[in-house]
Length: 325
Image 1: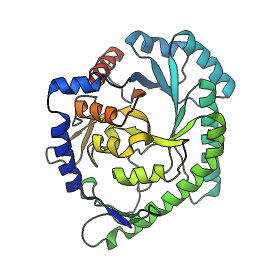
Image 2: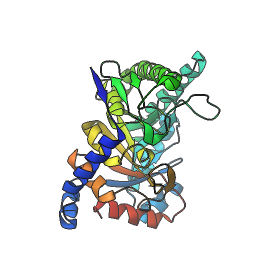
Image 3: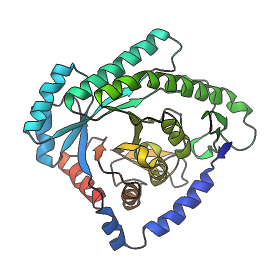
Image 4: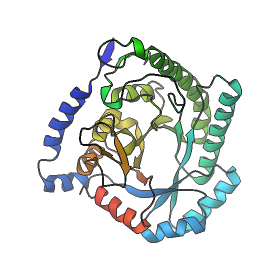
């Protein structure tokens, strides 16, 4: 059995869905009020000095990238609790599960285990994990441009068969690298599941321009393949704009969605490429995204992954996003 996706299909679907979702501004705001969403930002160590400015700016929680001992994490949690704040997630980040060096793979597994333990101490319910990446700086892999992807994959294995229209011979190495990374990522995450279950901390898988799982159905298949409640999806809104409108990713992931990063990306006029910008300054249709979150029943944290503006401004922009405006 195979699944084939084209950018044109996604664009047509998005356009028709958008017409239905945005029938009126009033309806938009009404629907946007259904789910309870909370405001957060990413910080380093969640101590009082780092938490207080966020609390004063109107944020209720944070995602931290400080992987400390469980004892240190418990101490930070106590500080956050006293301030009425929540350390809702730990940012583990990149892993090297597809490395040819067994020592690097083992080191990545250990680092992720430590992140899960820290999350337990912090009182967090998830760890953000990017399983691996391919096609980085210095890579010789030839792959389609973001707007050229037309994915065909095997629904049993998740392996890519085709990635673009026409002759895919020049993409052979990319397809093989993608499939190998899929297999090694699945094997590594399965090793982590028993600890995640024991600690009651979700492994939240995210894509960060790692040239893997570049279409909604493909990423959904990867996350769903574990068939485990302790493996979910962490969706970054800005990271995926160049591949397909974010509301399509949200609708595809559905109940697999456990966390959301707030970023924005402004596409070039021709829709090919672009650049990251502050939330609400780019190509993301935030009212439609807000409704998509409601439609899939998402209730949780919206974490801004950005800098360069006053905290109060980020808080205000997030308020508008939550309001569906």
